[in-house]
Image 1 (tube, helix red, strand yellow):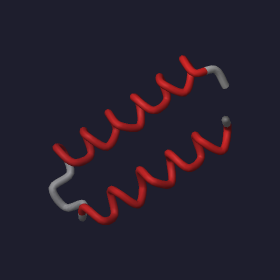
Image 2: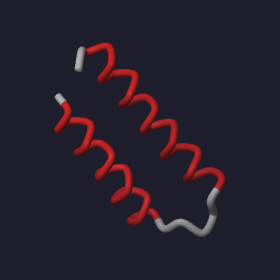
Image 3: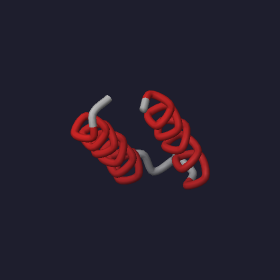
Length: 47
């Protein structure tokens, strides 16, 4: 994966987290952080 591709995926994950936090009032902060952490770990494993 190129640096540009990593940046695009990283941005997508952050945008997803932002929207989940804004739109889903029932989600707990810890759950959101855990979900985003898992996505970021998968992304870095692709590198």
